[in-house]
Length: 189
Image (cartoon, rainbow, N blue to C red; front, side, top):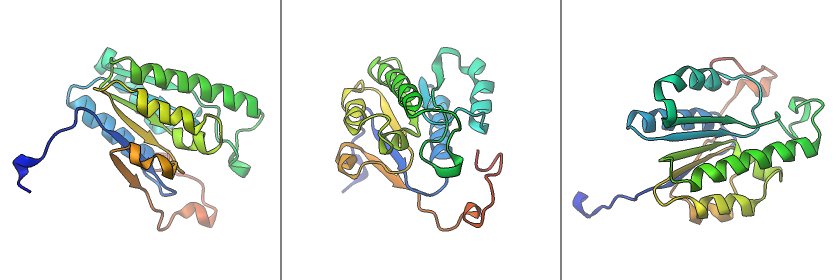
């Protein structure tokens, strides 16, 4: 097939999943590429409520991009993650936060205002039943035809793979967490 035989899609659905490190980092890189191309981007973050490096970075660049960048942080912390789980947060509070964040994501992806909507950690939210797989499928299906969508987090539902255009599985080969070392600021968060 010759290069001129290839076509361009108006928008795509991108998934970064798997147990390996780098899913959020890849989505932040995608955000940078999109903003650098003059796109309008919504970065919607599930789960993470504590301050992490990407939050500081996004807050620093928000004034540069104005209405071209929307950042929404709606999590209550890790859920069903053993000792790392958020303390003093009930299941109902986790579900409510996830549903509110989902509403923001659905509003952003259907509005036609954004060229790219990133839903960071949404796959974990579905896996833990804080939002439903049906809601995730609805997000993909109802997006504006001109809006690309990026979904990150572990455990993307395999049966939804036919509905996406690009899927990358981040495979862990080795991580120091397995030897009881905590995450490093600037590298892991």
